[in-house]
Image (cartoon, rainbow, N blue to C red):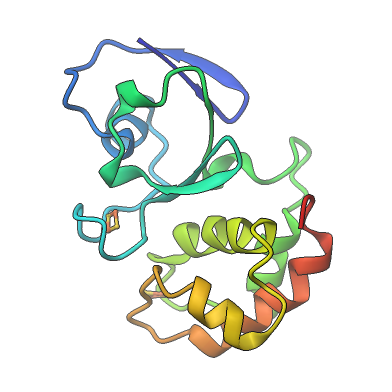
Length: 154
Ligand code: FES
Ligand code: FES
C-alpha cells in the first residue's frame, strides 16, 4: 500500500492491522508522533489527515488511502523556518518533557482551523483531548492564542 505523508509517497508492505501510528513510527521512521496510550485517550499520537486532526492510534493505515497525512516533521518549511504554532510553543514555554508536544501542536492547528480558538475557554475545551502530564496547559493556551491568526485556514 501507499501512504502520502508530508508531501511524499511511501510504498509500504504491512499487515492490514497496522495502525497509522505504527506505520509512521515503525515503517516510515517518523517518530515524532508519540504513543502515550494506544487507546485513543491521550492525544499524543494526533496527526492531521487532509488537514483535520485524527488520533493515529485509532486509525488503520489502510483506511487513510490517498489522503494526505501531516506529522510534526512536516510542519517546518524546507528551509527550516518553524510553523507559527511551533514557534509559539517555544515562545510561550508550552512544553516541558516534550512527549505530548507533537500531538498538542498538530491538535492546536486543527483547533484553530475548526474555529474553536476564539477564547481561552474554547481553546481549553477543544484541546482537552490532548493530555499533558507536565501540566503546561496555561502556556499551551497562550501559545494557541499567539499563533491562531497566523494559521492558514484559521
Ligand atoms: S496514543 Fe493515541 S490517543 Fe494515546
Ligand atoms: S510536556 Fe510533558 S506531557 Fe506535556
